[in-house]
Length: 336
Image 1: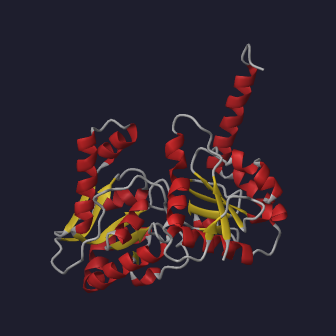
Image 2: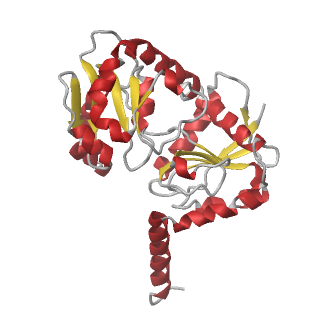
Image 3: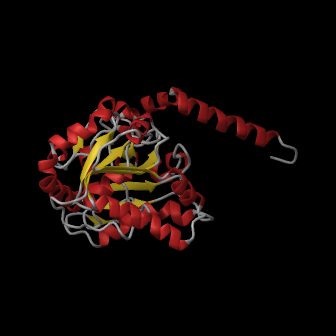
């Protein structure tokens, strides 16, 4: 049994509620945890695990976590949970969007907590008469594999490009009724499908993978650089297809159509066991403990090689831009 301190460095102010949603979701999960093995701590001194649950409120590179006094004092038991896209894992922890090329003994691929819930994403029993062999509702322009999906053709396949609608969701320009209709359409099409395509986007991970499991349908994973979170028996309820074979999806899924019913049921079972509200806290606590147990180099030393990832092109450009903006700000008249 471990005592887990959950916290965030997100400062108060506009947007804080959204940034703190993952923390509050894990805190809520702890209160309804069906496993009853681990518990919450309220003091870093007595905690076995200290978990910073962050989104973008901690800074692009988790600056406020890295310099936090708790991190500096208790480095060997500090971890980070984050679902951001394109991260550098400065702390050991659970990173939903981490590229498998950059994983190590300090990291575990994760899932999503605190994301806005689709009230229509309920589980309906799969059956043989579902109208769609496969479906995809989403943006088709933010990854090459999605462009291939947009060109798929099958009499029982449905591909809807929702780029414009999703942009309006992000801009918060939809009315409440329009937003409800948007979520309802996505959920209903998923429920009417045997297989649901879950390609990478800007991130190697996709929230639709976990939503598909939640609704009891078979996720089709199209993301070569994504690594499965440990625990679930992925091969028993999901189909993983290399991105280069995306154009062959109709044939691949027709050949496995007879498996869809049992795989969909198993997907739901695995979601309940590992990622549901009643299991998320337990899953995260167990993963943090496993990272502690497999540690061979003290974190005060193991953390330094990660800084080399600043040389990755994307991060180099972003970090340099941040430094230049900071320098210009400091040189403005009247700025100290």
